[in-house]
Image (tube, rainbow, N blue to C red; front, side, top):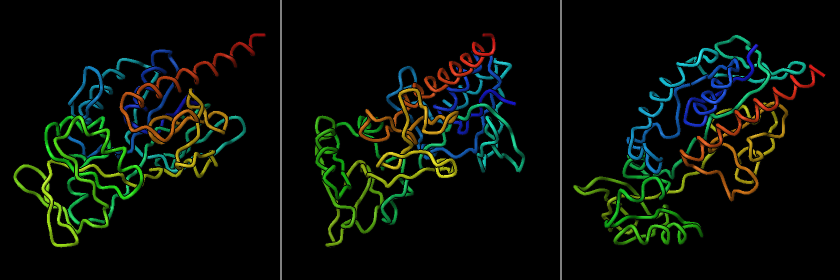
Length: 283
């Protein structure tokens, strides 16, 4: 029996297991090896680690976690979560594992506009978050590929960074290719636009099936609805990182710093819930 099982080995999950390890809770981290930023060569906007490879961040996190004897990391994907009496059962590698709490840190998956050449450059010259990737195109011409009302906001956010911003509806872009200093966008009228990089807003969805399996309450964005400590609508189940959204957020936040903070807060909530049970048992 584990005190907590964390599903997802990105920054949110790693921080949660570190916090639980420091509080000597018996914890299992399950890591499928799939990450939303798996194609990103450099992570940015994270204090003391600005520009570090996300894979290196995960390696360093695992090395730190190895110092805590009550935690274990298993490189395997969970397939199902069910409730049995007061506990939760996580199926991993075909075997059931019992726990008092589950922290979901499985993240989102992104569906890009179906433009040839776009997916191959996703995470490098093609990005989503101006906070994470905007500075790398400083003083250069960039494109905002967005056909919604949010396009103007993205362009305004990037205005002090880029030398020029080209706003295009993605349906106008027939193909994305390379040119020596960036991307060449081939448009439907036969013209081209050369830019250093492009910002696109993908359609994001839950990467894992657990929110549906557990019937977790959702926000309009599709993110799991949580309180500030990551508690979901199901007792004992927490959700952290960009798969979750508290009411005071306009949408899920794709931020390493936010994911780390959310992982810590959910772990604190797990410890507090465990402490309340211990207090009740002593009274």
